[in-house]
Length: 181
Image 1 (cartoon, rainbow, N blue to C red):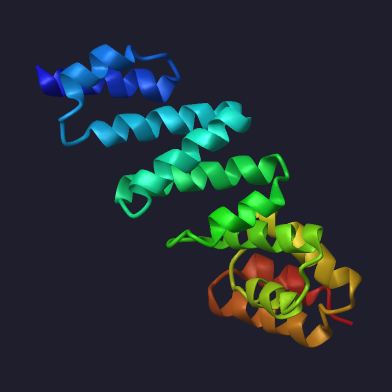
Image 2: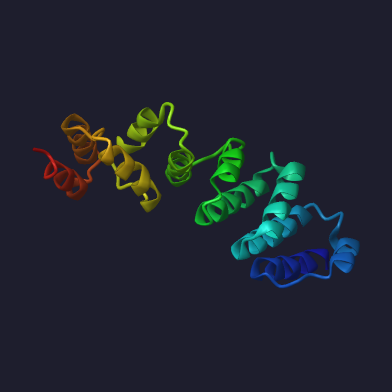
């Protein structure tokens, strides 16, 4: 019965439907997977955005930040902050993230550009550029920033083309090679 109640509450939380908090805590408060319901509720709030969602995410991560079920909450919060261009908050939350992918790293680069935190930025953006695979769209602002400063040299373009070819990404390799003088 507890498992069935959990599954129903989790589905409601994922869908963003309000849950009867007092009743839910009485039935499932001690259930080992209860924090997953809380995480789903916070992720649903983050889809709406706003200060209440930010506060809920912050409280949740303060309590459960080191737990595996907190990673999707942190990711959702970072995506929400990036979509709202809340760059100071983004960098604060990003600093506590353990597992980050290229999208999150590039969003952090965009945040630094927007905030004028340029120390070491050329090197960090170049490191994201030097990949043999197609980069996520989140990297475009950092790449555009490099290009505008003349930092995407023919050497870097050639290196990326070679990385792409070595990774079997012939289309990307050929496209980058066409950018060479």
